[in-house]
Amino acid sequence: MYVALAHFSQGDDGPAAAAWLEAMQRIANVTNVRGLAGSIEGCGYLCAKFGRYEEAARLLAVARNIRERTLVPLFNSWLVHNREAQAALRANLRPAQYDRCLSAARQMRDEDAASQARALLQEFAATA
Image 1 (cartoon, rainbow, N blue to C red):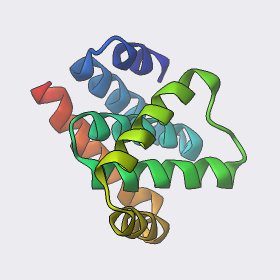
Image 2 (cartoon, rainbow, N blue to C red):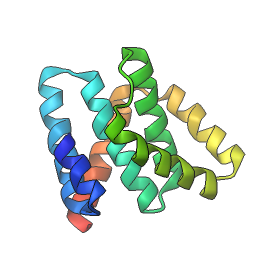
Image 3 (cartoon, rainbow, N blue to C red):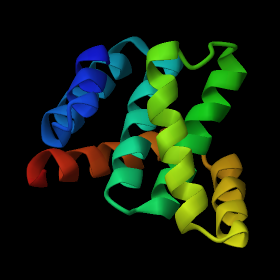
Image 4 (cartoon, helix red, strand yellow):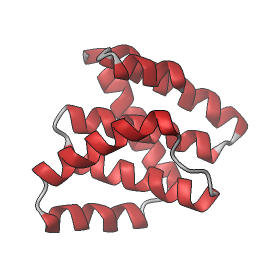
């Protein structure tokens, strides 16, 4: 997870996506939903960076919902990236669009968000 965040911090998007994808696959073996939220969150950051704002909004909201449900906050090293992604969402989505994304995230099952993030991470790892 932190290797992926380090790659992302340095602008190495392909390796970041690949590392979050690998973390997601390993986490699935131990059924760690909070760990899964980290890869979903990372995918949201990449989506925001690549201009895929609605996907970013949904994934970041799902990750936040998991963090709140598991009572494990976003760690300090992630905060700057979360703030940057949220600023991009506010700058690029109309309030009604953002609200629709949050509503969709509330309806989304963790498994569905993980599947969406997995597909996006595979795409980003292959093309970045």
